[in-house]
Length: 427
Image (cartoon, rainbow, N blue to C red; front, side, top):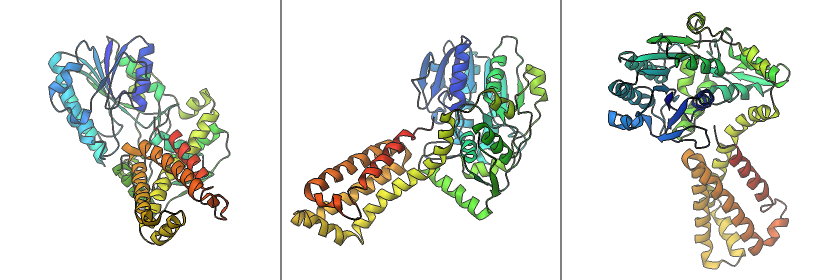
């Protein structure tokens, strides 16, 4: 079949694309930022949230046999619009499919959104579901629980990261999860692409076991080969503060899994009854224990688990470092900066040089903090660090032997920025 896959660049979307391509389907991926390294037949670059007219979709629906929508965002931010992605944009897509006669539409929602909508995430998801159900299409709505697999992003990445800690902090109010395995989700989508597959149904995809977060983390620790960790529940005030920090990071364009919408959703839990799923498709969902036993953990998984939380520290520290040095140079450190520059023979240029350096530091720090510019900010930081090292070596070579090592410290700073560049990508 010729399949238009919405949200093909995401964690689940990329796995669906690879799986269906192996089965012989022709996949055209649609995403705001295509991933050209993926083996798909072609790409459509489109921001779903802004595609509010049928004309935005119709050119991409030619010769398409089926549409699969797995696009989703956790929370609104400058880069993400939950209403646009979950409801408004795809609502127009469903209307366009009806208009051109594309019958088969498979839509990924989230478990429990038909029962309660505690956050804008679930509320907008459910509005999108209802728009599809109102269309004269052979629609299938799949509502998976938390999806786990070999790749990791968002909640699945956070679970792995928490499993790397010898003492695990847990958020208050977390309810049970029936995690579902990514291969089972892929098998379900393949089933509903068959010509004689049933349609016009909603289906919950839940794993066989109800597990609390600490139980899931304990299973991952055993998978990694680490001893059992102790756990404790964070006080509500600290949890609220962490969610606020996550919201702040989201406002800067990052995608942390710990945000306000996540707090509201985990308080509801993600559980369901898999019997109807099995009865219709014949698929018996695999337990987390079975899935982890199927493939042993590699050293890459252990590195990822440990680096994921380090990433949450490295980037704020680097941004604060550069912004802080710039602010200090413009305020309390300004006299010392003038004195240092005069010692190099800069004379009347000392003041402008200090100000220029401070503003450059602040610009680099802001670039690192603002996710769309982070890579440029890191490269700018490396360039600025090397410039300081070369200029200092020429003008004040004695700074290499200073007890506090002002030039020597540039070396670990450069190394940390290289590490940041290496772990910058989310997927």
